[in-house]
Image (tube, rainbow, N blue to C red; front, side, top):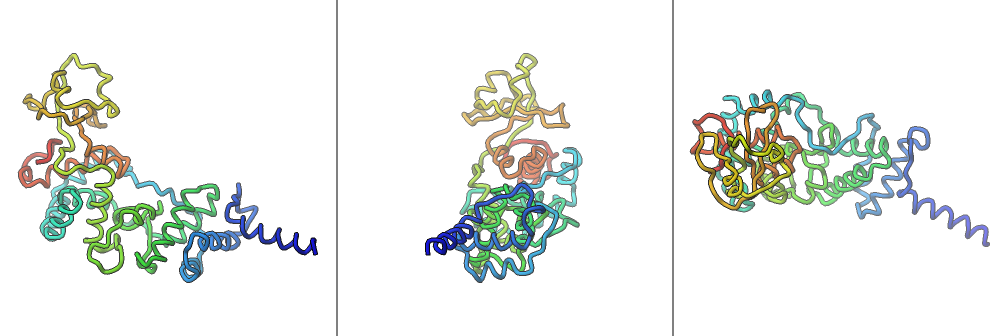
Length: 338
């Protein structure tokens, strides 16, 4: 009797604690299909329904590709990227978006405190290099990632976030695709970000950041607001430095008020005084434009939180400047939002 009880206990423990087990090399210790079965058990324990688990894992195939869940960063040099972003053709496309979706943009901007020009600049530049990019079955890619990297807790967590999106009927499971990094839709959100910040703006029951402009722009605004975008705050300006300013003050980690920088002799590029106030700002020299010096504010750093790429943040800032009505016909130079 004791022996049978012990056998039952050991079997139950194996099932119960199997999801927590990890392997240094799954290719030698467990098959992909056995790994999938373990993930199914874990998913059920996460509260995901049997129907969702069964359908999501149906005919899952192993891929050698693994998601990084890191926003893609352009491989182009900054000057090339800015050239593409600020091309006449691309700016005309963005201005057309501003006009075509003006009503939606006005409402979203009012609700989330992110200007229409900012939303269009961020979204369009994220998709600047989208042509010919491969797409993947998001669940299949994430399952393969957990198998290829069994100790990667983030990969497993993102998989469960993705499954919960499907289980809650927030996304269309038949169109649930990602890029090679496991990022979703044209906003390139991780599943966890989509769950927390995705917006079904048109009220059709789905958060569609793949094809629905209303959902794309509202989700972009909601996330930008959450990572620190401040309405009506300038992002940055081109400046000139006094000869005696210490070189080690040119550092994005050093923040001082604009008033302070003024007392140190910092002026706008044209020699005029800085717009004096107590807003914090940092001095940077963006590569490869070592001859240009910028005073950047909190909104620049919000753009860096969206995507850790100074080239992207600067391109967005320049594009915003060009899309502002009062500056639409002026040369593209980093300056203040109006």
